Length: 66
Image 1: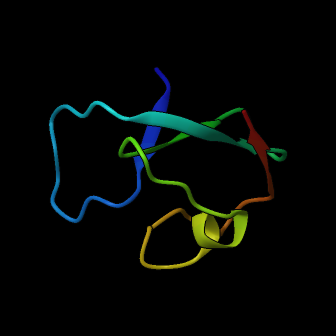
Image 2: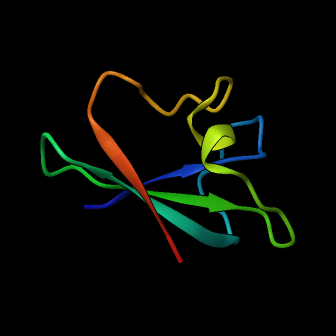
C-alpha cells in the first residue's frame, strides 16, 4: 500500500481527487509517500515539509518532483 498526504484540505477525507505533485522518498526506509494537492494548487518543497501539513520529520528523505 502507498500512502498519500493530501495538502490544502483541513478535514479528513475518505476519497480525494487531485494532482500528485511529488513523492517523499524516504532514504532510511522503504515507505515513500505521495504528495497530492487540489487541482490548480502547488507547493514548494519548503511548504511540503512545513507544519501544519503533518508530513513527519523524523526520517531522512528527499522530495522528488514530477
